[in-house]
Image (cartoon, rainbow, N blue to C red; front, top):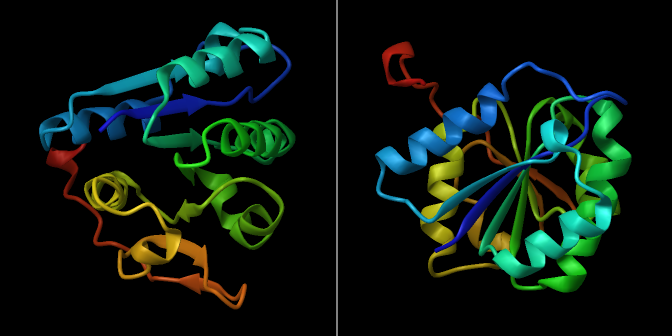
Length: 170
C-alpha cells in the first residue's frame, strides 16, 4: 500500500513554515504500521507542474492525500486532482485541510474522491486501512470524519471522528 501526501502551493512564494498537518499524518500512519509513505512538499520545493505529474505518475500511489490548508490552493488542487485521476484512475484521492470545508464544490468539480473533516489522523488511518481492499468512495461512507458523494450525487457527511489526545499527536 503506497501512500503519498502532498502539499499544494499556498502563496506565490514558498513558506518556511513546516507542514505540520502532513507530518502528523505521516507519523500517525507509521505508528500504525504503514511505512510505504512519501511526503511530497510541492509548496516548499516548487517543482514545475510537469515535474509534479511525472513524480506522482512514477510513484503510483494507491492513496494520494492532498493537504490544502487555504482557499488559494483551490485552482492548483483542482488541476492536480483531475490530472492524477486521469493518469491513475485507481488511485484514491483524499483532500484534507481547511479547504475541505468546501467539500460540496470539491467533490463535484475536481478529481477528489473524499474530503477529511476536522483533525485527520484517525480518519486518514481508517481510509488507508480500508483502501487496502476497497477504492470505491462509497465503501468509505461508514468512516467518521469524511464527506463524499452518494450514488445520487448527494453530499454525505459522516460526522466527526473523536479527536486524539494531545500526547498522541506529533
